[in-house]
Image 1: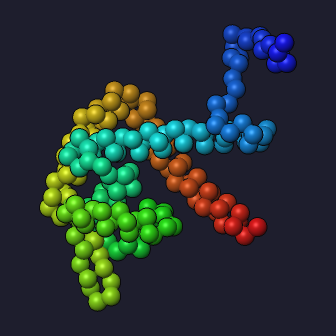
Image 2 (image 1 turned 180 degrees about the vertical axis):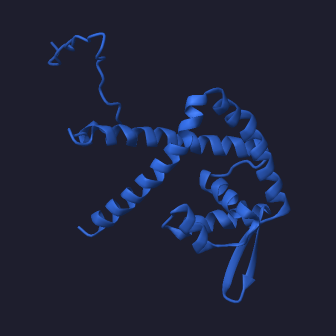
Image 3 (image 1 turned 180 degrees about the horizontal axis):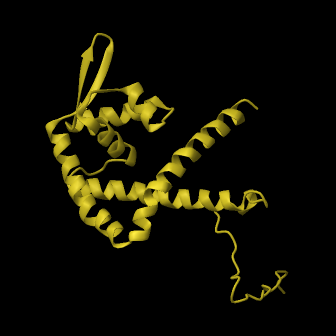
Length: 184
């Protein structure tokens, strides 16, 4: 005989649907945190989908076997066609562990899509012509596969800018909370 109780049914009125937050860690949910828990689950799912997207898009552009960080570092090194220092890349991407970015740069150097230059003790990185070509193909594939789908949903397209602003604000809140937690 099972000790589990049967699910209880709750009446759902036409004007107020039954809604439970969709979360990945129910043990973290409190009355004050249901929305944040739901947001965090969405962030996890969206982050993983985004990582899968950048890997497949870059693979379709011709660069295979890269990690999401490798692809994002290549994009940043290509950004505005300016040489970047390791510290600058980490700062802009909000990455604390410089060795992760350094490893990605070494991998990209080995593939010939990034070049390094030494200026005294300082090393800077820039995309090579081959790297720029891969990024350009990535952009074309992105326009075809992602941006075209985004254009089809005008409401979502309008909300993207506000969502980006909100994510930057929340990034600062998480950074501050991490500093507070580290001081406990």
